[in-house]
Amino acid sequence: MWSRRLLAGAALATLLSCPAHAQIEDSWLEQVDPWGISYLEEDEPALRTRMWRGARGQDLLALMQEARTKGLSPAEQMLMRRLALSAGQAPEGEDSDALLAERARVAFELGEAAAAAGQFAELGSPDAAAMAADLNLVLGNEATACDTLTTPGLEGDYWPKLRAVCAALAGNTSGAELAMEMAQAQGVEDNWLSAAIFAMSGVAPKPPKAKFDNGIGFVMSNRAFLEVTPDAVPEDRADIAAAMARRKLTPPDVRVKAAQIAAEAGLIDREEFRIAYNSALAADGFNPRTLLSEAKFADADGARSDAETAEAIAAALEEAQANPARFAATASLLRDGMARLPLGPDTEDKALLFARANIAAGELEEALRWVTPPEPEPEPEPISLDPAMPTALLEDIGPAPEDDPVPDAADSAGPDDGSGLAEAGSEQDPGTDEDALSPDPEPEPEPVPDPPSFNAAWIGALVILSDPDASKSAIRKAADDLIAAAEMEGNTEAAARIFALWTAAGTAPPSEARTFLSLESPVSDASSAPGDAIAVWAAARSGTAAEVVLRTVSLTNGDASELGLADITLILAALQDVGADDAARLLALEATGYWKEAP
Image (cartoon, rainbow, N blue to C red; front, side, top):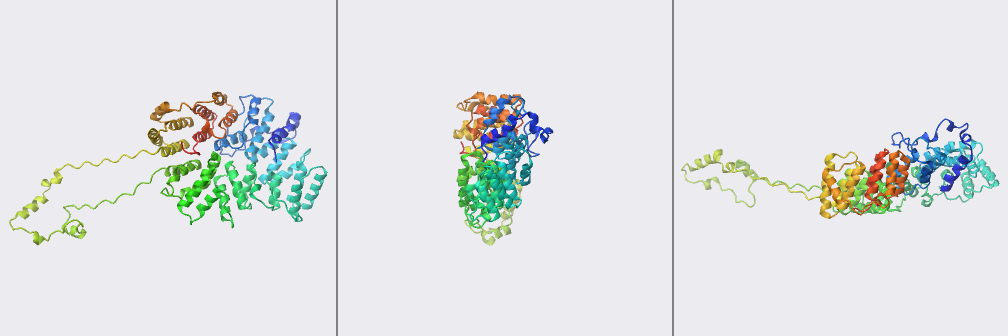
């Protein structure tokens, strides 16, 4: 297993001990600047090419060596990925080579296997080449990894083992066994690899258990069809977990565990996550072992009631509230299950949780559905009987139960004195109609709807914060609702923080919200170390985007909601200044702590 010290130190050993011309002589690096290679997708935003300029190399190196790569939130993942994968101009100064090695290490620890393999290959040392070859085994680039064996001057324990592996992969198990004997003669011991090679040849009476701590273990475990258990999934190698999640032959319970790790690291998308779980659910004998598996199983079970399904989904989401990356991954997987549930007596106590989960999954309309009371069924209008309606039609309708029957015409006839004709004529004269002379009754005023609860208004404000294209009318309504609910329920400081984050993310609050922000901003939300946040902003002013990212991730520390309002405002402004507007908006959302309980 590659250690952090090996990744940074061993990769630099050759770089720092050899003249610069020796490192690139007769190599591809002579024509291509390794700093100028982008590993991002074509349509993926990148940091500006001057991202490394404007700061001393020694300062950037110190920040890189201390950079967090584990336990990142989705916004932090986005920023660190762009730092490690964007093309840029080389940093100035003698620390450029050391920074190049640190960049490769960061890509490796983020699980960006393809980028790390390419970057390690550019470093030019045998140890870095070994890392590149091992990563290519994970990526399925076995020919590329084995071609590295033709490079002259390779030294170290890795290469004899790779020689044996490449022979085994080519079907030459006898040659692989001989290569392992030669490796052992050179003092390179690996009992597990020897046993795996014998298992491939079919002569091992008791094959070893699979292990996936590196590329050699990954490829040999798969090729030898070694027994795999969930304990074999490496929690510190998200790139290998992603490869296991994508592999159809991975056992179901192993595949779902690997998919969870990879999804939290942002290495597989929603569809790949869903496919991994659906394949497990379809497998014979699959036994849900986690709350997330139970939730997916409940959603797929047509015999479960809405209440039972909602309970299972809520349990999985509540368990995932430990950090925003896990909550977002879990919500994305359970998105369809929540969409199939109605808002009603069986689910109303979980409505806020489901709304927050849909925010995490990017389903903003669904989030609003869970906090919007259903419209009541309209009451049927009573039938009104018009006095001018023909008698025949009245007879067809029939008398109302409480009315007396209409008397027979013969019984009700009076003396034939002509008064009946006069009365009839009077009834037909519109000029003497008393109803026509009386003014129309005033329409009843429509009832004023009750303001939404603070939780509902808070979800509406989060939707605005998540949507860079929110309309002015939607922004105004969300602001009005939040102000009214906050004042009614005493949550004015939480509402003011939302308005501040709107502003910092690029959404302008309306006038009344700005006044509310000025009056209600939390006085206890001041910065504890304003110099750190100002340093981020100052780095943006100098155009050093790499420093902005590194200082930001150091300050946010996995939970931007713990930062004071002044600090997060300066950080978001700095991210926008270096062109990372989408990351700034996502970080602003995380600064609300939305994946936790509502304020």
